[in-house]
Structure formats: structure tokens, C-alpha cells
Amino acid sequence: MRSILEYILKILAKIVIWRYQPIIVAVTGSIGKTSTKEAIYYVLRKKFRVRRNLKNYNNEIGVPLTILGLETGGSSVFSWLINFLKAILIFFWSKGYPEILILEIGVDKPGDMKYLLDFIPVKIGVFTAIGEFPVHLEFFQEKGKLVKEKAQLVESLPKDGLAILNYDDLSIRMVGDELSENIKTLYYGFGEGADIKINNYELKMDDFEKGKFGISFKLEHEGSNVPIKLKRVLGKQQCFIAAAAASVGLYFGLNLVEISSALGKYRSLAGRTKLLQGVKNTWIIDDSYNASPLATIASLELLEEFPGRKIAVLGDMLELGQDTEIAHRQVGKKAASVVDLLFVVGSRSVFIADQARQQGLDQDQIFEFSQSSEAGVPLQEKIQPGDIILIKGSRSIHMEKITKEIMAHPEEADRLLVQ
Image (cartoon, rainbow, N blue to C red; front, side, top):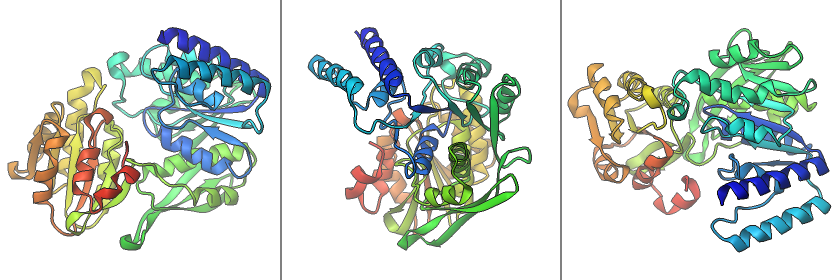
């Protein structure tokens, strides 16, 4: 049944693209895809009619639904039939169909990228980050195969297309080195070889209570540079997100000043380094949406920038295959150098705890739980006024339950937390 549904959606999406000829910007990578897609949307939305994936519409069903501008029919055959009729009507008439589609492309298993590229004529491909231990390795066995799968996005670009690549990620830089000379590339990052260079990063913490916090940095391109201020946004990783979005904006003719202004309205999504008020006059960095080793270490580095006692609440990182233990131990090593208290959740996170002990954290600084529902109350008992608490883990570990447990205003959970 699912294969039939995918086939129908693929055909409908293909003919709608043929009918309206939108320019397609596609985003892939192991981390930062969704936030990058959102930032690109903020940059382009004032000057163009744009549409991007909503929810988690980044697979064989979600991407065609985004192209068609439709919601899922769920398990209802009737709802899907209505969707198909709507898609046919869209083909014949759609007032204000988007000029640009911004599509997040998820890759879970071999063949996913090829399937989607078969009906999506991507013109601008953005490759965000891979890291040393990327997720989805359980389905690819080794990192090289995963990189090769995702690299198809930029390898398939037309001569007038553009590959936008993270210069600071060695695996992605190697992909760029191997691209055909006919494919134009634009690199972004902190590295000296980046075409769009990030520098002067600073975490601003003027007044948490009034929401006056965020990050500032500069983007430099071809001798010009512009300051970027992201309000209520945290973390060095957000610089990469903004730089990728700026790269797309430049392709479409925006200047750096216009891009800076547009990015000033960008906000991070629920569960992605959101700063929330906690009980007992504490602060929570809610990064509970998902986790990979690279992203978790980046979040620990963010935690390190804050004053006060530091607590990390870390859940399992899934889909790491044979790298599961070594990746969790790498996180444990970093955590030990940053935190005053470490809470871990899940069977794989025992490696985080064990490595943290080996690195010098005392046993009375480490607390282990099998599931997220067990950790909230003990955490509440340990936190003190002024603490800063990082909460992060893979999606299926549901670390947002812990965030809700220690929020100063849990009645706002439906609005502020990932659902």
C-alpha cells in the first residue's frame, strides 16, 4: 500500500513541477537540515513566493506533499483520495504557486536520495554537515557510503546550478573536490578557504529575563562584510546555518545587508537550542529534538560558554551502528570537561557516564536512568538557583519530557516544546 501511495505522489509531484517550473533548493546533511531550511526561508520570503517542508515532511511521502502543498492523509483512504483530487486541481490552476521550493531531504537508507532526485530537478544543493560519527550508520555500515548517498544531491546539479558546501566539514569538502568542473561551488564556514567566511562569533547575554540574548558574528564575502545578529538564538552552529542561508540569498541576487536584515527575524525551532526559564530560577537549553555526536558536542560547547553551575542531561544517540560505543564515549569525554553534574538516559548512554567517570567526574556527580520519565524528579531535587541545564537526546528518547518537568511554566509546553 505504501509503495503505491509513494508512486502516485511521485507522479503528481513530477507533473506539478513540470507545470509551474519552480526553482528548487534542496538541503541535506546529518545535522542542521531543518534549521538551515528555515533560515533559507527567512532570507528569501520577502522577495519571492517560497514554500518549505513543514513538520517532518522530508521523505518519499513528505517531499511530494510539500511540492503539492498538501497535508498527509494519514491512515484514511478517503483523505488520500481527496488529496489526489486536490493535486489534479493544482495542476490545472494554482494561484500564486511558489517560485522557489525549499526542500529538506532526509536520507535514512541506501537508495533514498536517488528516489527523490528522480522527480526533483534540484538547482541549488546545500550540504550542511556530516561529522565524525553521523547518524543512520546502522543502515549504511560505514560513513563513506552515507556520504556518497547524500553527495548525490550536489553531484546531480545542472551546469547553472550551485553546490553550497560546509568548508569546515572535511567529508563535505572532499565531496566538493570531486565534483565535476561544470558544477559551481560556494563554500561557507570559519575556515580561511571559505567563500563566505564566518568570524567574530560572540554569545550575547544582556538580559535573559527580557529575552535580550542571542549571538552575533560577521559574514565576509568578496571583500564585503556585514554584522549578523540573531536574537534569541544560541550556539556557534547557528553561524553555519545563517551562512548557508546567506549563500542561497546571494545566488538569488540579495546583497549582504538585505540578508542580514532578513536573518534578524529568524528564530530557532522548538527543541533546538531554545533557552527556557526553569524552576528555582534556573535556565534550560532545550535541545531535545534530536542528537548526533557532532551536535551534542556542539551543545556542550555552548553550555561551556554560560556562567554558573552546568548540568547536562543527555539521552541515547541512535542509529550509529558499529560506532555507537565510541561515539557515546567521545561525548562522555567532552561532558566531563564541561559539567558539574551529568544525567544520562538510556542503555547506550551508559558509555557516556562510564567515560565521564574515567575522565575524572566523581560518582556522586553522575546519575543514570533507563528512560526519560524517570529523570525529571531527581533532576529537580539536584538543581539550584543560577544553574544552566542542557537537555539533549535522540528523538525517540523523548527528552522533552524532562524539559517539561523542570520548566518554570509547564503550561506553555505545548507551545514551546517539540511535540
